[in-house]
Amino acid sequence: MFPLGKGEYSKQAHVALPEGTFEDEHGREGFYGRVSHLYHRHPPTGWTRIEGPLKPRAVNCLKLAAPEAIRPDDPFGEPVTFLYNADLALKIVRPTGPMPYYMRNADGDDVYFIHQGAGRLESDYGPLLYERGDYLVIPRGTTYRFTPADSANQFYLLIESFSEIKVPVKDRGMLGVGAQYDMGVVETPSPEPAPAGDLTGSQPGPQGEPEWEVRIKREGEYTSVFYPFNPLDVVGWKGDLCPIKLNIKDYRPVMSHRVHLPPSVHTTFLANNFVICSFVPRPFETDPEAMRVPFFHRNIDYDEVLFYHDGNFFSRHGIDAGMVTWHPQGIHHGPHPKAIGAVKNKVDTDEYAVMLDTRYPLKMTGEGQAAEWPEYHMSWSM
Ligand SMILES: [Fe+2]
Image (cartoon, rainbow, N blue to C red; front, side, top):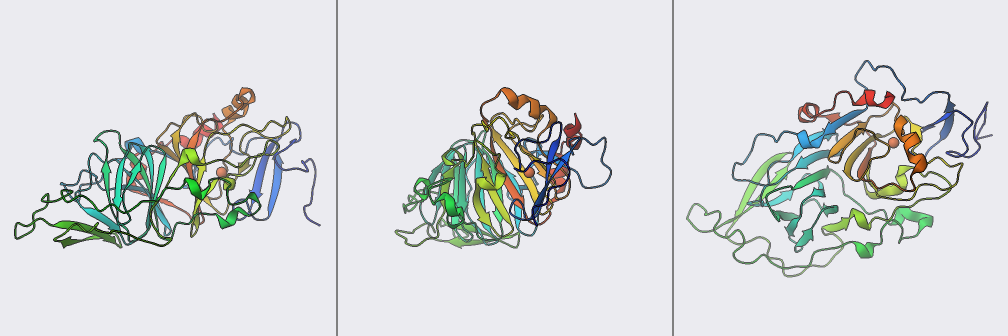
């Protein structure tokens, strides 16, 4: 019986739309569940106004104010949370110097995405050098310390996940394990205990002897544990749990020249109730009947968040690097009206962005609201 087809429609989703129509995907479970494609005479985002709390939202992360310093001696600074739910918190950190302590997050895994800057991440497992475009996935409970290479232009997106971050190797199915990115390109640290001078003496203890601080976050509260030796003293390790590094430029997108694939094909990391996806440059579809821009949809089972990292954001007029858009469940989004015409003469995208799809609704903090572009929802009908 299914799929049914009524009135004017295309037998193949995202291809050869009836003349003058706009395709709208009404689907369940993200892009995996039952679905119908609706062919509208007008773009579903062509509203004249919205009254009520449910709106597409945008935050300019460059304008996020730093929270009051918990520790004036800490040039790394406290990350600023702008969106959150029970599964994750999205934060920005803009360090001007190294952590004067070692950090341990007992609340969740930390995924740092290096939007700008570079440096060295020390951990129990050894150091990793990082640069622009790196994802650094630090498992819950790891002791670590960031030492940025310089004091300017360090800008990191921090995704704190309250469940374990996993690599979707087994979910690639027919694509094969080498699709998207081969685990061979993922870097892991090797033990190299911190040199004796590192942090030594910077924090004299009560007796005047040098001491090393491990700052542990549990349920959002900090506890400091002090040692008379450097706690990063691991000489070796074995196992399958450790920090990992993947650069977004090593992500190889899955695509088809004949049909526009949904963003779920760009899933880079998995966690409970959310996924992290990477949007990277790719050629547009070449089949003349295939859609070349994202189809309209109302993402009824997932909130969608995009962090714009680099490039020309063809489908989101008015958005620049360092901004975030948030499309809550139930209200449409799709290609910006100006993008539909703009892609006709282009052969590829050149955008880099990090996307999160969250199963449960997100909330915006006061800090996020203070950095919001309040008219964003009206940019869709311009
Ligand atoms: Fe979407």
